[in-house]
Image (cartoon, rainbow, N blue to C red):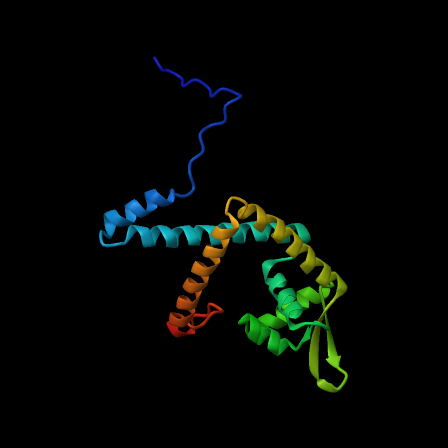
Length: 193
């Protein structure tokens, strides 16, 4: 005689399997395997890592809605940060983004086809190429910033102005420390070769 499991109720979804451990659980497992780990430090680091990862996913979703990639957004940002008239040479763009010239050329090719940037010869120096932000590219960048501002305000809604100020100071100190001890802020790992 076999017994069948009852079917789950139609109004109750099956229990979801967690994709990642809770931070406290993860830290406890780390302590089990590496007893000298500082649980407070590990909790802070794991929380920062998870916040950064989830923020990245949220930003990528917003960019998808706009029809651009995070790689394209980085180029748009570099041109906006350069200031009006939002123009840079491809070599300078590659340097700012930590890319090889070939990778930069490939990215620019796509962005020209998508009307995000133009690529023209410099009138004063015909050997030099200039990459310039288009109106469409600037509009996409501005809309991404508007979307991000709404998300970021929602993210911090439960943190008071005083707590925000304290958090800014603490994170700035952490950033200074990592920039001093790991000087390649662009994340390149050439020294790990």
